[in-house]
Length: 262
Image (cartoon, rainbow, N blue to C red):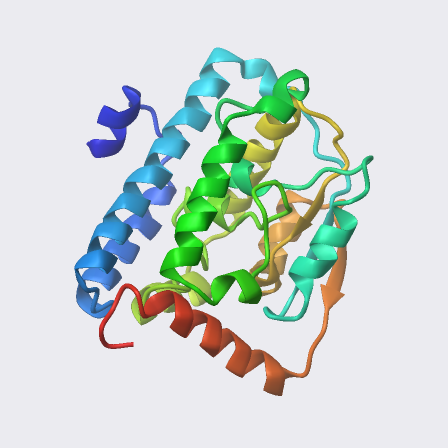
């Protein structure tokens, strides 16, 4: 209701996202142990993701020709988290002939970016402000996950539009949801939706040679291969004895603002 009111839109597209949304909310209510800040942030995140989904569908209804866009042979980075994948993505993103998901685009993909106005897009400044707020709330994050409003980022937020994403487990203790995501969820519709958003992003804003990355793809590579059968992959590596404490430290940093019992 709140997402519809915020956007004056009402078409969420196909319904596969509802299962993940219901399990996520139930898990958060039962397990997350949010404080007041956490509960408010979680509720706002759900509404924002639904609002973005409404806007994506709105643009497709207005411009059905977007569907004709082709995502050809993307290079996709995957592997364990905390293995330098962000650094590699930023390096690959320096190629002017290649395209990445920019941080501000992941936050607000609509209206779809336009090459003619890209440098002046006001979402850049909005994203920088959001990242400054994040730095104040999570002081260590700037060093742990260095990024800018325009640097490459993961498709976790677009997967979040489908409520099948590791995005949520980073800042909330939601084991029931994580178990569903890792062992029960069907990721094929999720990756089809991600492809749908990529088409939207490249429609008026080339280049179209995508450089993507998301460590959690490793868990769902069968579904990823079905949706992106011509994809190529690269994997970053690190000793798992270094990965686990680094992930735990990152999750702790994110969760402690939202729960008094981490």
